[in-house]
Image 1 (tube, rainbow, N blue to C red):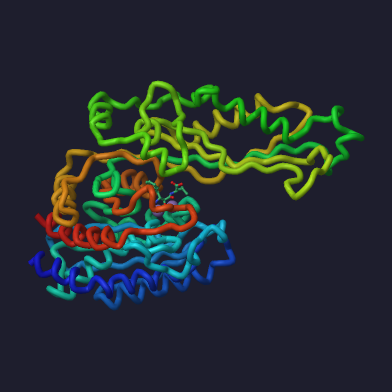
Image 2: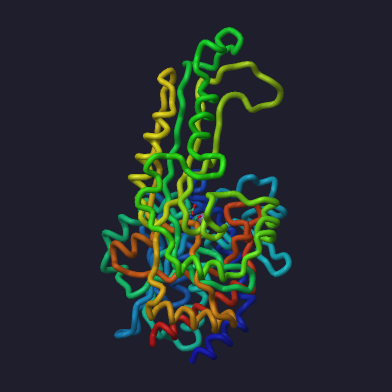
Length: 454
Ligand code: BES
Ligand code: MN
Ligand code: MN
């Protein structure tokens, strides 16, 4: 049965690429309210698309951008698979660095370029295309499927939890599947069994009530930019070890099995650095690059602003300075505790001569998935079918908040089956997705439904 489905996927390659182009044209940027209608249009298209391929679908409003829910439950007694994805995308800025416009999908060298190509429209669409292929060829699937495609992942998934909490029955399932992460490398498919969590905040340092003449006042008042720089510099030592009291409390160390397994993965530091234009790596002493990015917590300054940054000099003491900060969390840490240690540290480093405001955004814990479940075994076989290779077992450093929620709220494990690559420029200009991976991912998904039914 599966062979006919795979043949259908092969012969419909061009049609499936057209569908991908269609969804990539919606500028569904969740962070920026001027795109609100575009998110609605994208959700609308998706709902109709689900209906066209034989599912029931609905648009579920939230306090923010809507969720698209779709299901096919025609396989009583068979397992139920919940596919999660997100149709929202990151802002495309800086626009001038795109070779072709972010929302005019363009194919070059076997890759499709557009914001959302790999994160996450191209990746989640593989499961839609797999379902479509099963429905077209056999009029049914070997398992029940539910889709939850949200519009707020890139801004922290705040309303998704409320939806899941209020609709536990509707979203009940045996296993969840998410394709919103990378393979280990080109030609190296992987299953991700761990993701880092997140804590996000913003700190503002308020000084004088206006920018001051730095000659008239400089030296007699605290400069917010200088103080912010002190405070931020105190977060790490020169080697990159975090200096915030309590920050590492509770961190569950990597077990020996994992360290051995990571050390055995193919990894070329030079190639890794070359791709991002660097010659020398950096990070917490005592850990390898993969350990640092998968299993160690971080504090990153994401953005920093104060004073005058236009052309030419300007002699002022700025009135304020601010920074956006995010932490990546690992198992054993909670956003609340990390937030308190960070805030306490910053307040201690601040001067009584100025005022510090601390604003919290979103947070979620890290997630780890059972590596030895029967679902894992099914996913390994499916990837072998779709990609022609056994997948590697890896963790990833990024965050997908729903994974932890699904575990805590529904007791469900997630299969993180990434078809993308970290080099796909997600969140950067010229985001792209390899079309061969789009097709291989679709085939792996089609095979996964067969394997999970066993
Ligand atoms: N698809 C990414 C998550 C990801 C990236 C997983 C790389 C593994 C490797 C997702 O869309 C994302 O960007 N998540 C945000 C979450 C945040 C806004 C809560 C992230 O990781 O910064
Ligand atoms: Mn994503
Ligand atoms: Mn993202």
